[in-house]
Image (cartoon, rainbow, N blue to C red):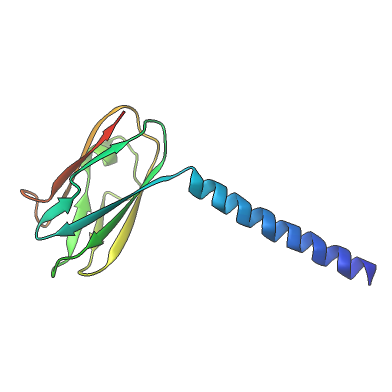
Length: 122
């Protein structure tokens, strides 16, 4: 009985510890919400801190799918996938590794002339 209680308590501590680690990781990430609708990103400019991981939460409010792309982020190997298709009325998350100071452009391959934006890292 003592071993059962001891094992259960150990498992409980491990679960609590893993949950705290998960929340700690989430606190180390800055999140930005972006909307794409009618071939435009809103906001189109994001100011982000240098050397910090960020997540873009992109919601497609339009009637057609869009395709998030960033040649700058891909070239710098800051994102895992070169592009992300976001279906109509759906949301996608793009996680970006810590960036150096600079300007990183992004766009939608479906609306490349109007759906453009940039991340300014300071």
